[in-house]
Structures are given as C-alpha cells and as structure tokens.
Length: 357
Image (tube, rainbow, N blue to C red):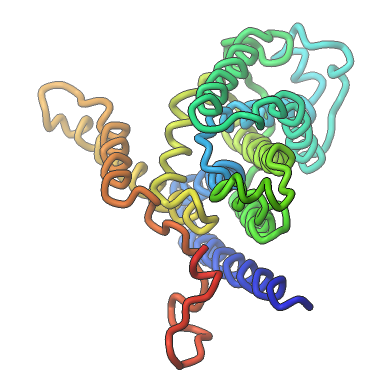
C-alpha cells in the first residue's frame, strides 16, 4: 500500500475510533443512570452530532459559511415524516396532501434514509450553481437559499401544513438509534476527510490557484461535499422529526441555524473532532443555562421573569471563542489516542505532514 495512503487511512481510523468510543461511553453512562430526563437530553445531543458533523463536511473543508444546512434539515424532517406516516393520520394532519403520497407508508428506517436521499437530491439540484462562488458572494447566496427553503416550507401547505404545526409523526428515535446514527455520521465524515475528494477539497480551500494548477475541479469537489452534507442534514432532520413528533417551519430557521453554527465554530470547524466536541460542550452549557434560567424564574429571584439569558450567554461564549481562538477549541488537530499518550512510541518529537494539516 502507498505509504501516504496508509498514513491517511491510519489517521482516519484513529480519529473515528476515538470519537466512536467517546459517543459509546456517553450512551453507556446514560443507559446505566436510566434517568428519563437525561435520556431525552442525550438523545437530542446525538441528533445535533449528526447535524453538526454534517455541516462540518462542507463548511469545515471549504471555509465557506454555510447557512442552508438547517433548511435541508427541514426537508429531511418533512420528507421522512410523510414517508413513514400512517395513511389515516395523513388524512387528519395533511388534508391537502397530494394523492400520490396519501397511501405511502414505509417503515422507519427506509423512510429515514429516503428522506435523507430526497434532501441530497434537492441539494444536488439547487446547490450546483452556488459552487462557483467564493467568499462573500457564496455566504450571501447561501443565506438567501436558507430563506428560500424556509419560505417554501412555510407556504407549501399541501406538504408541510404551512405555518401551522405538522403533527402525527410516529416516535421512533430512541437513545440507541440516535447514538448509532451519530456514530455513522462521524465515521462518514472521517472517511470523507481522508478521501481523495476530501484532500482535494482542502487543497482548493488552502491554495485554490495551486489546486487548479494540478487539475483539481473545485466546483465538482465542492458539489460532492454539499450533497453529502445535505444527506447528513436530512438524516438529522428525520431523526429530529421522529423524536419531537410535531414541529413547525420555525424549527428550521435562524434560531436553529445559530445554534448548530455555534457548536461547529466553538469546537473547531476544520475538524470532525471539533464538531463532536463543540456539540457536546454547547449542549451541556445550553441545557445548564436553560435550567438556571427556569430555576431563577420559578424561585422568583427577581421581581419579573428573565428571558433570553440562555441565547445571550451562548452568543457571548461564541464571541469570546472567536476573539481568543478563531480556529475553535481544536483548530486543525483531530483527536486520537496519541494525544492522551496511548500508543505513542517514546522518542524524539517529529513534525509530520499529518500534524501540519
């Protein structure tokens, strides 16, 4: 085997193994504790791992601030819900649904993967022209795409029930299922990062003119990353829909976009490890702040109830991270056992190409 390829595969294996064991340990601890509240909390965290890792696949490898990710999450949520919903429930929840979808009733897993596939197809069609853009034009266009997706979800009453609550979704997303798909998303992202397309994508990010000179098709590799990112977003959306069971288009707009972006930016957008670490840390901090805010209001510490403490605190943390550590907590180093001193051969410190990435 080519030494360079062997090195890259080894790096991918070490990182994915480390992160998968971390996610498994969280699942084991949650299962053993057995608290329903903690189970709900960790299940939601695993869903956010899928979403944040999916965002990292595109944004982390291109350095393009990518807004429509949560919009694609909404596409996956509605698509998988319609595919899995009982026909009788569709008659109650979606009175204007097209007849071709009225009798469609798939099991959970095919519906989940089908929703993710539909999301990837939609992204593949509408994102290709955007892949020609860079810097500010790409960011502004991606934000406009989020608004378009939100407007379609809000006004397409026959499929989404419009701005009203979409209800009647069967609950299938359990702690174990969310953990499995979180691990799958991490594995996909790690393999993509060390794949030929992933390496070409980062080359076009760091040195676009040199990448073109050696034959890298920047538009093609960006488009592949965008489609894969949208697939994972649709997967996360389907898990979310079958966990919360009722939602509106507002669940896939600015608030959720800021939340997932904060997870990725705080952890470190350039690495899969940063996406996972950011998700775990931000979820812990966010839920702790929500608990503190609710406790303060229940105990009536102040004369009036406080509101917005959680979002404001998260925004302040994000600003501080951007000022003190713009590359995120992990910047460009992936987590593996060697960082803990496990599996490292004693000897002089050497800088390798992997350490410089």
